[in-house]
Image 1 (cartoon, rainbow, N blue to C red):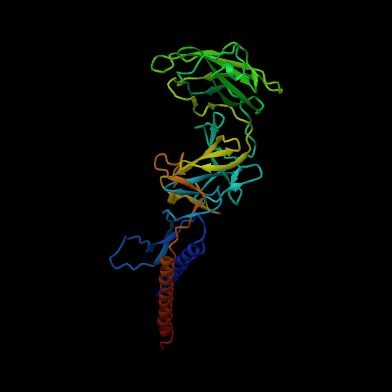
Image 2: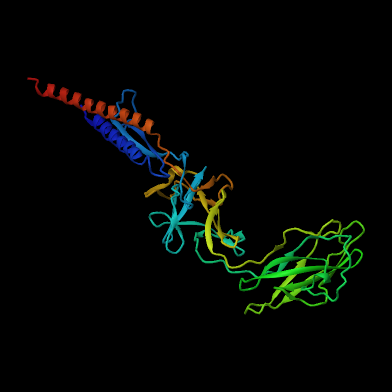
Length: 404
């Protein structure tokens, strides 16, 4: 007679209770993935092979299997929190050691690096082209600094105006920005020097003949000369025939470099009843202070600045595995690659079979508390039943001992 079956059942049931208890205790852990206990039966080895009359010697825990199903998405007030909707893991690094997690609770450390509560760095692809693109190089630790954005001098300005065909030729010559009768219309453009200081470029239009206008300029109220910067010619339909090429080199006298720029008047017309202008566009800007950060579903992190400019900081990288159930649990919401999981495939969110990201949100645990409590009751009954088999075996053994 053997107590083996009951003892193995008690051990397996106890392990199952441990797994259920761990699931319940982590029901509020962000990114946690629940586990289930898988059992296997036990038979003693026999030199003569199996028999239809063989009796098993109990059960054992075959493995603890994790379920990587999607958890609910919960909105937070932290702009650095991220939730994965779909497959994939955040790729983390600590002192060069790579691990993986579904917990997107991130913040910035003193150097601006995105880290979790345990100090693991979030990795991703760096920005390129001065923040205008994303590099496809190897993932690096993502960093968001508060450094100001350096100013950019204006190199190109685009201006589209509507001139009046019935305008008369000015009676006062030569052109003088201070004399209104020396031109027909004017419009200002805000431009910037190499130190980020703003200047006003005033563009003047003086009719010289039917369908012909001369273009003049003044910087901060000072004329750029009595010689026209260019000439605008229009056809009988009011369309400009050949846009003038206007290249300017203007000294600003503030310690900054000369403003060297091109003024593009393409699209201007001459069939309006009154002078009109569309909002001019130019590529310069002043110094910008960091104001906020945003993230796209594809994981591109964008910093915004007080001068209205935005720059890419980087792009979050996600990794997938052929067999995520083969990952090694490290604790702290971290998993490590193993031979059983296969090597990770790392790419941008939304590419291939990778999920996308939701900023300012977190993925909750995938634990179903109701199901876990029902499983807990079942596991408890299984434990009690196995204890009863031991009790029955003890009673039979006691009967044998009492035989005379």
